[in-house]
Image 1 (cartoon, one colour):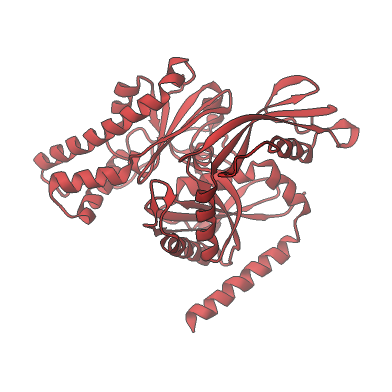
Image 2 (cartoon, one colour; image 1 turned 180 degrees about the vertical axis):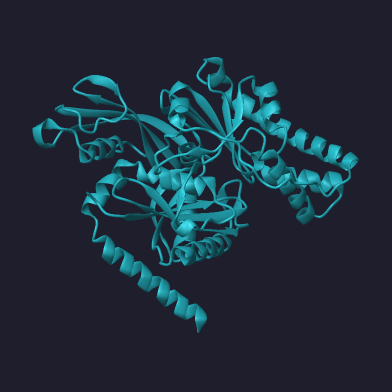
Length: 428
C-alpha cells in the first residue's frame, strides 16, 4: 500500500494565480496542506502576454501555499484553458500483462500512451488524453477496467491539443518562478472534477465556468466530455460595465461586484461532503451554507441600476453560451441542465436568467468539501486549483507513479530543507 504523496495544482487565471498543495493518503483520502493566491495581470483572454508578470504571480502564490504547508514543492500540475484547443478521436491498444490476465493500472496507462501515438501538427502540443470508454476483449462501455480479466485492452479516447506556443509560454512562466511543470490539466476537466456529481456527468450536463476574461464551457454525456468551448467575455467585463455605468473607479466597481457576488453565492448554493479527491457527491446530503448578511453600500435606487447593468452583460454572456451549446441541448444530451462555477457567476439572478435563455435547469456549482490540516482553512480557495488536484489523483499515471516513487520520508525532508533554505534567504 503506497504512503502519502504530495500533489500541487496551479491555476493561472486572467486576474489571479492560485495554488493548492495536497497530501494523498494510502486510502486515497486527500488533505489540503496549503493554499495561496496572488493577483496576476500577465494574461489576456487565457493567453500569456507578459511572462515576467505571470511568473511573479506564480512565485507569490507558491510562496504563500508553501509557507502554509511548511515545505516547498518543486513541481506543479498546471491548468490550461480551453482557448484555441482542438480535439481528435483516437484508439489505443495494449496487451494485458498482469498475473492471471488481470488488468492493472499499468495496462490502462499503456493503452492511453498508445492512444497518444498520432500525427500531431508542429504548432500543436498534447494537453490531455481523455478516455471515453475501455474495451476488454471486444466488450466495450467499460469505465474502469482495473481488476477485470482479459487479454486485450483497448481505449477509445479524445486527445486534447493546444497551441504549442501558448503551452511554451506558460511553461516558461512556471520555470521562471522556480518551478517545473509536472503535467497539464485542461481547466474545464478540473472544474468538472471539483463541482460535478458523477451522476450528472453520466446523464448529461453542461458546465459553464465564468472567469475573469473568458467563459469556458464543457458538456458531458455518459461520463465523457462531448464539448469544449469558450467565449471571450467574463467577470472583468462586468466590472468595466459597472465602472462606466456607475461612473466610479475600477477598484470601487470591483468592490460592488464582490458585494453582489456574496449575495449571489447564497442563491441555490449547495455544499457536498466528499471523502478524498474523487467526486462522489451524488450520495451526499446537500445543505445550504450560512454566512453573514451582506449589505450594499449604494442607495436602493442605485442598487436597481447596478442590477440592470450586471444583467445586461450576463445576458450577453449567456446568449453566447446558448450559441455554443445549442447543438448539445438540441440532442437532449443535457437533461441535468447547466452548472455554473467561477467568480463571475456569483451574481444574483444568474440562475433565473440562465433558465430563461438556455431553457434548462441551472444550479451553482460548489467544490466538494475538503479536509484541512490542523483545521486551518484560508478564506478563499480556487475551485480550478482544487479540481486540478482531484483530476491528478484520479489519473492512472499518478496512481502508477505512487508504486515506484521514492521514499515519502525522503521527499518530505527534501521539501522541508528547501522551505527552510528559502526562509533563511528571505530573512537575511
